[in-house]
Image (cartoon, rainbow over all chains, first blue to last red; front, side, top):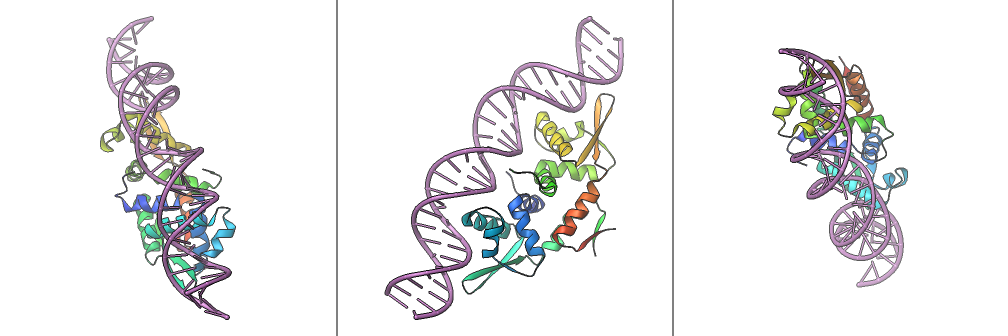
Length: 96
Length: 96
DNA sequence: GCAGTATATCGATCCATGTCAATATCGGCC
DNA sequence: GGCCGATATTGACATGGATCGATATACTGC
């Protein structure tokens, strides 16, 4: 799949039930340990790691170490990218 | 892919370069004839028809006949669904 | 250094989907 | 009815990606 369009990359990253669930959990708090996702999504640990990598490479998530754990949070420009995508789709949506 | 979550279905429908291009063109006008997409997206006519079907079944587009042509437009509740998805992701976005 | 825990990578498999060529269906017109 | 242009469907193929088990890497504490 030709992935030149960054908006397509963003949508592709979110268009998976496991990944959308991860992003929703993170968007409700500041940062979440990777270990907290393994339990709630009914998939194995390597699969969670794979999805976290996809979200990181798509620029949706940012990660930082804290001891043994790795904390994931929303990427700083995620809200702006989402707002830009929203504007290009309908022109009805604003950041408030 | 377990497609129970309607938000995942919406994102999946938009997460394709051809389909996102189609939706962007439609969102810029009221309704567009299906024949207008065949030229600009560098894919064959059956492929365009397939993508239009995917968007229709995902509730993104609505279609109506006008003689030989079929006109596609954004589904009436698309903006609302998008706004709801936006709210569940960041809580920062409002319909204006 | 060693053991244990947390996370990532690798290799393989299976399923979904994007694509096209060929064909079918539908609406209009003669 | 018969033809033609527009759109949809079918069948087949190739590719991508989601998943898992096994393994590797990284950090901590002893």
